Length: 312
Picture 1 (cartoon, rainbow, N blue to C red):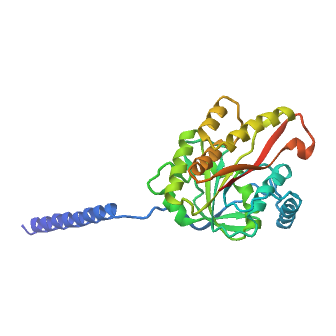
Picture 2 (tube, rainbow, N blue to C red; picture 1 turned 90 degrees about the vertical axis):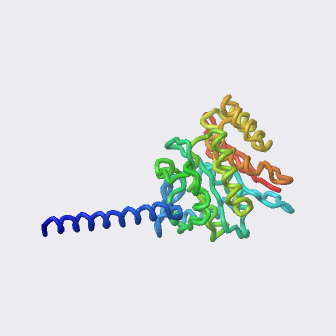
Picture 3 (cartoon, rainbow, N blue to C red; picture 1 turned 180 degrees about the horizontal axis):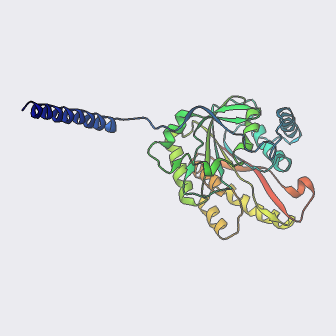
């Protein structure tokens, strides 16, 4: 009899114990928790130093200063700058073109910069943000804007931390030393776009409008035509630049599909144009164009580079 009582008490005790655990788990599961995305006090990069730009910070700074000093000034007086479209090749090839655009930011205070770049190594129907607290270059660390990242990520499962899209990608990183030089301090929202379809570009533009709007400066990273003879490249790039200047991402998408336009950063360019379409008095202007044949003299197979400003 005594042993039966002990057994009953034990079973009742176990039942209460598991009931408490079940209630606790239900409460925990139903609570509102913040989106966890940024790895605390961690830094990503660099992945392109020594290949796309000098690994030595002194030499890198000298190169950038030389590009900025040697490039022509672009008259942007009386206009505000919404964003830039800039190339992302090795500095020896596209550094001069990029400098003409970044030169416009000298002396400006821009607290938040959104950079949109393509992935050259993987493809996915998503946008990836490196889930780190900082982006590291050999000129120092840049804080990733945690507040902006959390806003973008929340409720959008297609915005991910997918290292396949960014862990070897140069197209975003090569813009950073220029920004570190001309701006100094700023917070970064780094976006690697995994596909070049117009639907993803529209979706990302809508998300950026909703969460950040005009509280950011936008940069799209792209090169133009690849590995055509010099004269053919010039013709192709002129057509592509005209479509960009027309501010019509849909027509640019159609031209790219029909092989009438060629740019590796199609997704970023369509996104920034979608963002810019509704800006009053907005105008896209070509700041500078050249191709690798102009830089190194080899003209049988060249890559095109354009710097454009989005003014209002």
